[in-house]
Amino acid sequence: MEFTELHNPNFEDRSRPVNGIIIHSMSEYINGMFANDFLADIGLSAHFLVGVDGAMYKCVDPDKKAYHAGLSEWGGQKYLNSSYVGIEILVEGDNDWSDFKKKIEDPATFKAEQYSSCIKLITWLKTEFPEITNENIVRHSEVSGPAVRPNDPKPDPGVGFNMIRVREAIKTPT
Image (cartoon, rainbow, N blue to C red; front, side, top):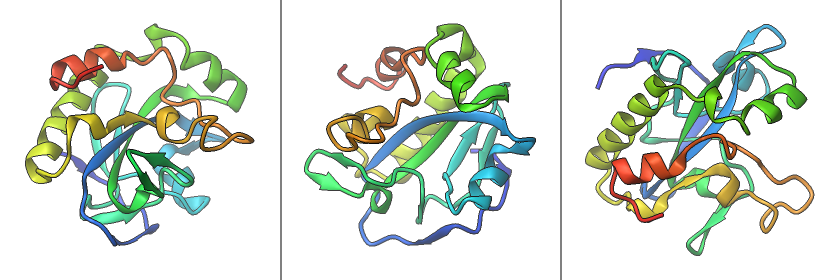
């Protein structure tokens, strides 16, 4: 798999084996900073970014724990950073929170190239980490939504992101 290598210093050793993937979305730029630089600046990280043009960036080795999910829960596991890989789908532009939330509701925000790269990346990760099950390939909003974070539910990747398309491509039940 070919990636552009970026560096994010916010990671540590994993305490559990990789068994899932969380799909996120975030603005390509925030206050003029590229997504990975912004995350690094605020103490967060993702393993991979998928650019607007479908380019794939590796920011943290997936063997390591990145800080992407925070308070999260799925399938009886809590604090999923320890066992899940985080993929950020980038939303074009330099967006404030209000603009970002509107954009992730619009299916036109997410490009064919992004879906293609996301599906390739997930397929590769499933080969690298055979303990990843299709049921554990989820949206951030599914694992850090209102049931888990009633005061700060995560909306990403947003209803505009066609998770059914991704699940069908990797043969995941919806």
